[in-house]
Image 1 (cartoon, rainbow, N blue to C red):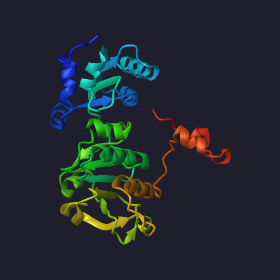
Image 2: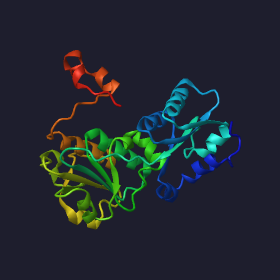
Image 3: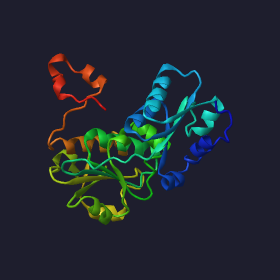
Image 4: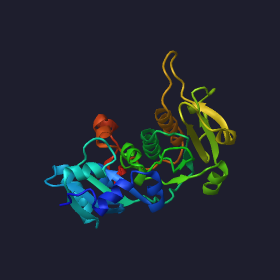
Length: 283
């Protein structure tokens, strides 16, 4: 059992609290049984620190990590607390390689995250993009690191299902995907999101809630789009608005086999439930 915070793997985990180290080393810090299990399935785990005598869900995650070839080490509670980035007590912490997801097929539907500094919002945006069927997430300078621990926790595994790239300018985006029509998400937009043609290569640019989209990306956008709100209601935050718009943008595109969560399936009446053959269980 590891009892010293000076252990080399614990020291590495602590260094991964810093974005510069994560970027330089191509590594990520993963906390909690769900993310560790997802990372094991993705084949990116290197080292796992786990509490002695863990709860069943923690043990299942540790076993999945071991089966995936990761090095699993037991650690004392104070060591796990030092390794973890979050303030809440963690019983399992892992170090893994940065996820590299292959390009997705189909007409491009891109989410550009421009200057969103809150890592929780960035992680939620990644989750929304992956859930809606976006084909690429693009992060611009000034945005929080999507592979930071807080963003990874907010994404709850979405980072393993959609490619995420950096692009400083719209020209760099053009090198990733040609002919994309960009639209700026704005609370002041005159065009409603459902009255926009999303059938071609499209991208949604989401900016920080206080400053909005930067001038360079705004100039590259064809139009602004927004979510109509009832009078007197505060506008949606960036992540919520992006989710609404992206699901509409994905709707007219060739349908992919649906991947319903267990909760969503339970909410459907029997007559509404899709045939079992048409449902792909998350891998």
